[in-house]
Image (cartoon, rainbow, N blue to C red):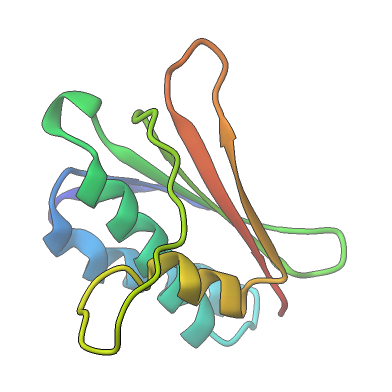
Length: 131
């Protein structure tokens, strides 16, 4: 892999939209170890990471994707970045090629949300996906 470093359930994503394919490979690897279907987790991770990368600048540093399991076996996914801007769902028209990321997350996640990090050092966007 090129621009990303992985550990058991965490991946640090460099500031480059081309690494989203590596994000999907990482999600497939982790969900495969948990005998979970990977289609929805790959889709949601791609959207969350792309949003974080799209709105962050080089000075904001890397984006971190974390995957874990909840007590009931669902997939906990979170993306941390150093920007202060909180994402929100946009209204898009049928011809628009952007603006659907959080709509997709909202459609597939049991729940999702955003929490600002203490000390104004960024935010975490999380989603819980049923197994």
